[in-house]
Image 1 (tube, rainbow, N blue to C red):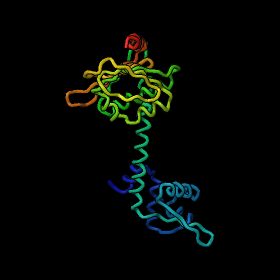
Image 2: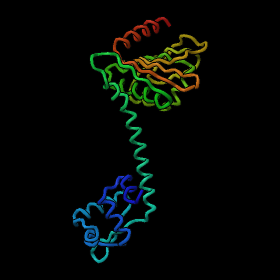
Image 3: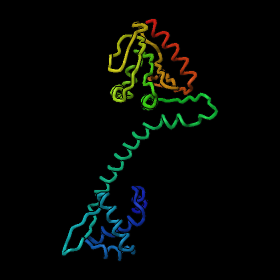
Image 4: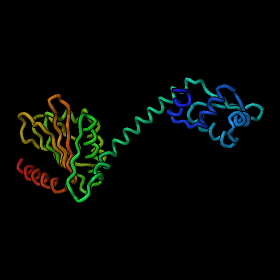
Length: 246
């Protein structure tokens, strides 16, 4: 792969690359000279130079009332790539926060229940992000959980800041715990169905959705979210009746 193709993969277009490569060979030069060497008009050349400066690849200095532009050391390309990678990492995190909402909009025609499957710690994090996103839009910001001692650590590892985010958004949770443990936090109530053992699954009932999380034989967390207001309502009725008996 030649230089131009590699630089294109870094996000630069042909004119950016032409100006950058010319600057590497010319050294400090005014806009007029750069425009002549590249065959690009002066106004466009100046815009390209400003763009390259924002990318950290070009700098300038003043000499005799003129601006002289010159390319930075090519090693700066690695720093540019590092910046792109950090930006992509932030974008990935942003995308993860909207995926549950986009999925809830996907293929919901005819009022049919929709089931989404998730795998691994990133999948469980998506489920928990979906809980926050869904409950943030509900008028009554309260959801229910059947919490299993066998799975609490898996959920915490998937999204360590979940409880802090829940409290920050003013979301209330009622928990029926199966097995010992479980901490008390603001905006939460907890009752125990049993303190002996646990359950092979962890269930959340929120808005029109229910989520069920378990682990496979390789200790990989797996989850399924069912979006159907009738199913969620049925789960909610059972939870509320059980809650009153504990």
